[in-house]
Image (cartoon, rainbow, N blue to C red; front, side, top):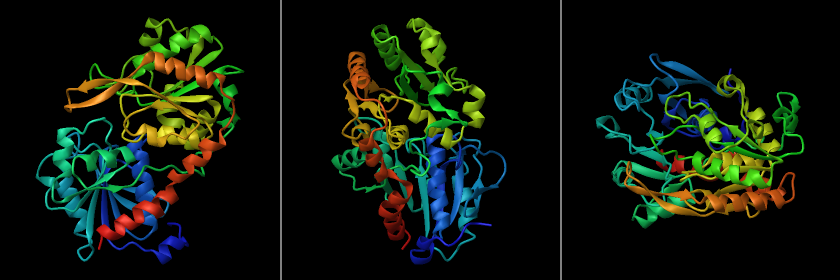
Length: 403
């Protein structure tokens, strides 16, 4: 049975049918986690909701077991992004709610959305804008008459407005009841779990997925910077919360990079691949963040960058990029690095390549700073709590679009 008794459900019920297109809710991806949070709250507050997957479910219509009752869960099609089935899945779900106003929410890159299945529907596209210039294919999408763009960062709002496109704003969110200072991982002290002792712990939480020769998460620059920093500070440990072998087929073998940079194996640690894929809870992730002295979250560009907020909610300060979405997501006691323009031929837009000496300098500042949880960062992250974002941003937007 679903949970009940939520005041928002009685006083502010949603009336409408909403299909959410993204990774399957609960998948261990950024999209999957955000889809879960959104779908759970849609279900909780009275909306009729379905999940349409582009990753995480194949072959059979199923149900996602939200805390508030079952949600129809439609599988990915033969097309990698479900362009071939979006129209059919949407029509099947909406046929069950003929008298309700209807909305399709997309949470994914929009430049991959192709075909007639996206026509003649009211669409709210929750868009990651991770370049410093607006890719033309994204501009083409947001100009469609049936699309309302929803920027997930202030950077996205500025970028769309500069192109003459009006948009809504809803940031990504985190559950601060879970993402908070947490001293244990699997019942063990977090720093003991990592084998850190008194060492200075630098963490990276970044998916190891590359586009051919380009890795948006800037592993090359970040690992090179660590190798330089380590020479002066051998009492440092790098924790890489990722699939270090790139086992999904598109990632890089980080072990080869570490060897090439001369980083000794005792200076780096990873989660066990089996734990990373199957066994780590959100509470354990909070423990990893808490065990870090700083999160290194520098990349070529972020559409949002959830780990940046998660780490700060756990009291861990962040080193981030000074471009795209990241600057708006850093509290005043975090650090930013400089970069150089980098052309992305795949999307005809610019990223930024982080400057390695600038990363090293930021690591030095973090090393010299006071250790322990930052209350400034914790307080800053509270604005991104899921319930705050739901009440302040999502509910007003959904009520307007479902009129």
